[in-house]
Length: 351
Ligand SMILES: *Cc1c(COP(=O)(O)O)cnc(C)c1O
Image 1 (cartoon, helix red, strand yellow):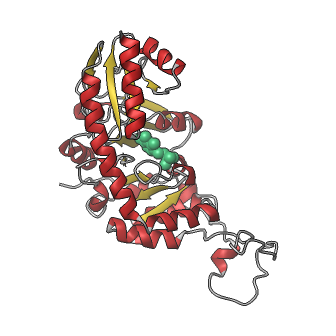
Image 2 (tube, protein in one colour):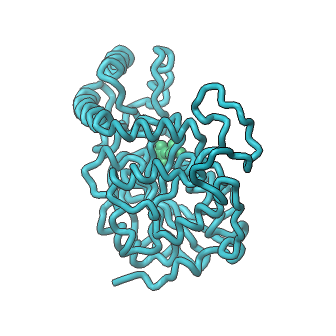
Image 3 (tube, protein in one colour):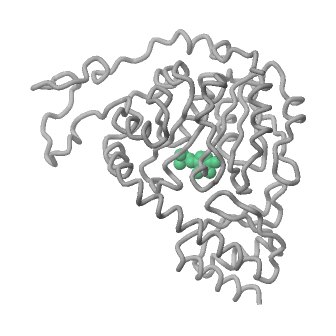
């Protein structure tokens, strides 16, 4: 079965007709002796090309990602964090004061903030008690103004992966764009949906270098989608959305992917041991299964514990007011030393 919605019909007409800005780098990108086309300062004190505008389409990074991910460059968009891709998707598909999107809380907060920024209604269809998608309720809540559905898997802040079958049912039946946020996929044994782009033209997969890849500071988010949609994203984005220093740093780091693979293995081992130790802390009611690099913990007096940890110089995320996460803290897996510090602090506090 395949979805009968034509994703292109969902693109706002003024975006479809948009004449993209043509930058100096777009009009000429090759080798030349003298560049006098972009009003740059000609002096390059550090010999790093910092005086020059960066590649607007970041082809160097895309070629590396293409090999690492096994997907063509034409399926890849790069943004200033995933948050930029989310913002652009709203601009492309949603009409302020008219469209709506569907989100499934508890989940990543940015979908809701971005919908508010664009004056787009956010229809919330909560996850079930075991933190899975309520497929029937999502389809029931959908109407002709529902343009996008956000699915976060592994989900933040709960940590679990959402069932593949449920996601596929939604890809086949939701008559809009389905965005699967895979920010934590590198910590999970689940298969990524990036290899299903051909089957689902209405699919956008988001990933990021901010978590497993250790480059939160570089601000590099990826969106994977059909090539025509990638072109539209490129047309709408600011021309030089990834800075030159970030592009250099990312290219260098991606060449050392073995380092990150080793770090991920270490983080997963630490996660298992932290998980075990948390279960033995008095007051802990539940340590939720996780496919990410954080653990959701239900604990008596979560807010008080949160404050006491801060007094000891340890910051975790207080999720105790979040629906379905009452009395929960979200704890990022740190280094072995950091995790030991956390556990001994929790033992002190809970006595
Ligand atoms: C951390 C996170 C991101 C990453 O955002 P960036 O802007 O790429 O740093 C995206 N989605 C989710 C669910 C996250 O938790």
